[in-house]
Length: 319
Image (tube, rainbow, N blue to C red; front, side, top):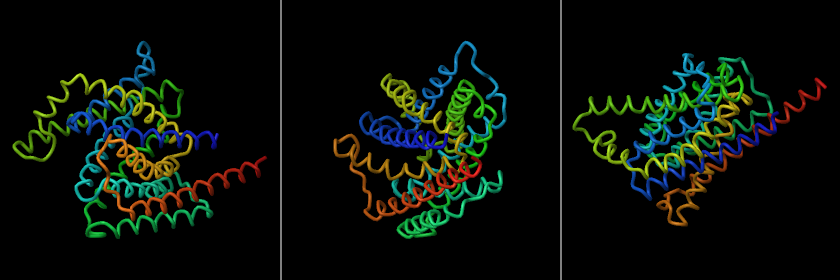
């Protein structure tokens, strides 16, 4: 089961990376209001997942569980905190900082599930820590940069959501239950964005902070928005979300976070390729950031190899 889960993790990482660059290309090519596109993509992705779960006999158990609502809420917190972090550092740097979720997840699974690390993983973990330290040193203001605080807050929310998903009864159930769970979570995230936007509109009336109401409504009324949202949400985000829940159930929250550590550098590479064809503006990626990405990936590969080796040894002892 482990090799197939690792392969699936690789497919999901590629899907999330393609989705990230595709959204950026869509915003660049169609000039959509970003908040509106994010909302529409989540609505379409969630709707496709629920349709796949079976409209006539849709499993309703996930929506009755408190954990489903918490996971959906945490995804909204993650989106808001991640977006705020982008005000204090470049997109590439913030994306690389999110790999700290691997370390947070390792602490989380130990505290919650008492799952210890294998000794062979330690060098890889130390390499990842070294890469993150180098990245922070390159940030404006270093350790005092507010992006660090918002990323830690964002990724802690991601880890908590993943810990809940790992033992969520519907994520451990059959395919239809998992599809319904991921569909409801995605739609709840969209609902949460609506609540946040509504609150910001009331509390920050007249402020330039947050999405512009006129631009949002104009974008939401565009048929092209919903065509692109269906392609991005139904074809990419929906399946990627479902795959993420499958991986979390099979490899655990820490295993999923470890796989996602490969996403930032892969997304950066795809963005460079898209920029070459004029689909997105040329990214201002510093060579140092790419070097840090290589270090973090090297540490992640070390940990994965150590985990696979440890599990094979355990299976050999039981056999």
